[in-house]
Amino acid sequence: MKKRVVFVLFIIIILAAGFWYLINNYSSISLFQFFPKVATSFATTTNSQVGTTSFLDNFSTKKVRILIVPGHEPDSGGTNFGKLYERDLAVTIGEDLQQILDSDSHYQSFITRDAQSWNPIFTDYFQNNWNQILAWEQSAKIDFLKSTSTISSLEEIHNNADVDDAMRLYGVNKWSNENNIDLMIHIHLNNYPGASKKIAGKYSGLVMYIPSATLQNNTISRPIAERIFNRLSLYNPISNLPVQSQGLEEDSSLIAMGAYNTSNVASMLIEYEYIYDPQIVNPQVRDIAFKDLAYQTYLGLQDYYNKNLNITATSSYNPSVNVYVWNTPVTSVDSNPEDIYAMQTALIMDNDYPPKGKTKNACPHSGTFGTCTRLAIQAFQKKNNIVGESFFGQKTFSLLNEIYYNK
Ligand SMILES: [Zn+2]
Image (cartoon, rainbow, N blue to C red; front, side, top):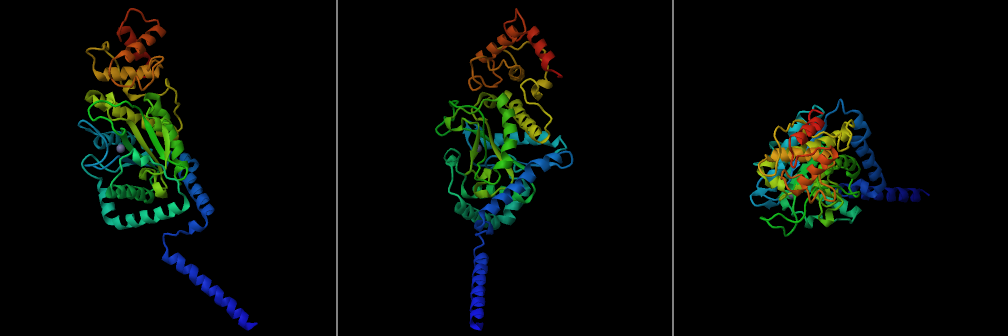
């Protein structure tokens, strides 16, 4: 009898020691690995507290912390069209967005870099934590690959970041996990494999990526991304590249999405336009177009966090219209592109642009006066019984001023 008790105790001690050894020597094996259901419900609870009810209820008292991540590195990566480099243009859009957020006390924003270098916050973070970032990424990868084998092939389209670039992006994820960031917005401009660097390509429009359902930050990212997507797609075409036709695409392989569950922060990657689109290529339109895109992004954030804006074409206000008065007729030959751009904005809001039967891809918000604009003006004039003006003349712009200026 006594012998038997000793034997059972002996077995218990051996088992306990074995378990202890496993936990201590395989740090990459998380306890959640053994209890996947616990891990899932734990993640869901945390996420919903961060991203939805409790946060929205506190909007008036707690600042929304947003990390703006212009795509690629200061000196490398990203697409280009002639002398236009995506990595530089992404910074301009990012800084425009930061400026708007800084003027609203509900938001606190951070930006990872400018066109020359990384923000010192991140330079220091990478320098002081490089080995930790590498080890953390490895362990996250092992954990994730054990739990799922779903990996999409988006990396084929998007340029593969080299190893150090990739690790800096993982570092951005780690930093945002540790610094109570509520949302990461990655900013890019699109292109496709084989596109010319000199002649505009055949695809156009917006695409946004959010973490797929296999990632823990999917549920907190989607509702915010949907609001921003609704705003952006009101004024801009959706990408007509077949694999991006949803416009709002889920992805699990992009580091920016928190690949291998490396992010517990809401995240989205916005490819605002294709880099060769006319509003980007034309230097006279680019600045106003980028400010517009940044502002539309902000309106989407307000739709989500502030919940007090309606999203219909006519009720949504756009800065390039609200601060704009046309004083002179706009014509196809001698007009300022800013005048044309603002006029197109108003015509979009009035549902005349693009004209009937044309797509937003065929008639972009370009600041260029062509057939699309002429047909849209004619439709607006007809609807409002304006006769005797072939272009955007006195009667037409007076009425648009009346409808959209100081509304
Ligand atoms: Zn990019």
